[in-house]
Length: 397
Image 1: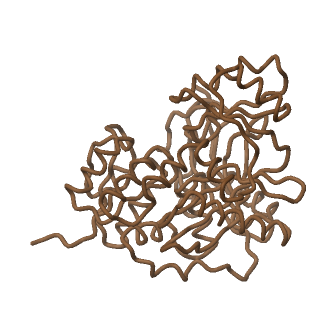
Image 2: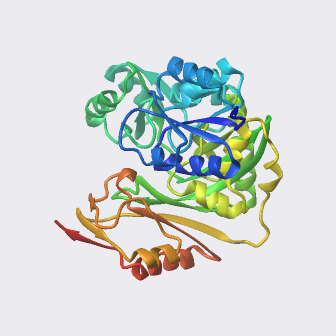
């Protein structure tokens, strides 16, 4: 009997993509995991596994054609975006096209597009050498930020406070990138937050300011988020305006959008934007906030089904939804009360009794807690209480 299920290629099989596999299952779609070989948790949720490098544009497009894919999606990571855009374009599927995926995966192209569309963003210069960096720093004024154009998160990013640091930090940035150039930006000393958005059928459904929970000596590592991030009316209006401008500048459509923002003196600066859903509890808190599953929205949109668009409306009850990752301050064996964790809807990423590392990056997270409340302090206290209730403990090796 012919299989009439919608076939969805899911690029990636890490924990950030598991929600997409579960959404396909709920919707009655067939999920095909596209990933390099390895012990990835998404494989157990997929209907089929195809070992293909998600960075291989031709390979992903060819696989989609062979399988007869009805949609191609990803979430929570940048690696597969260029291939996703290329394959969607080649196969005439809904989603970002080649140009928008390429631009949103390259900070130089992105900044250039922002400037042309009048998006508030930090001034920048493209550079190829430490000599050009010195000239750019003189033009922009110290401190400056050096960024690789092809990496996500904080990888390869360096803040330069003095001329003595220029060459060393330039070399550090260039050692992290595959390109022979990078960008240097003016340093905006403000407060950082993010925004989650979604565009379907050319319409931006929502722009949701999203607060960041950070960890580290300089608060450099994201370990959770909360919504909504409270801005005054003027800032909220400007964020909405410039996020929409940025989406138009990149040309994104039929996808989730993750935006990093810095605010200073009452003005938001769009730092960067990517055509995929953010990580570290953003999918779960966004779904809880709107009362509708954003993973299902991604999957439905990929096959041209826009029926969920009206479900993402601003709630009226003034709730805060707060999601925090669980981490360990030491290396050792992690244990917890599994029954208590289940009763409190704690999502653990590891097996009870696993060996874990002292937290250094989001890949070291042990699990995730999402709570709702009327204040940030209250949500933080509830999260701490749940951690205590489940008796999460890490014993040194």
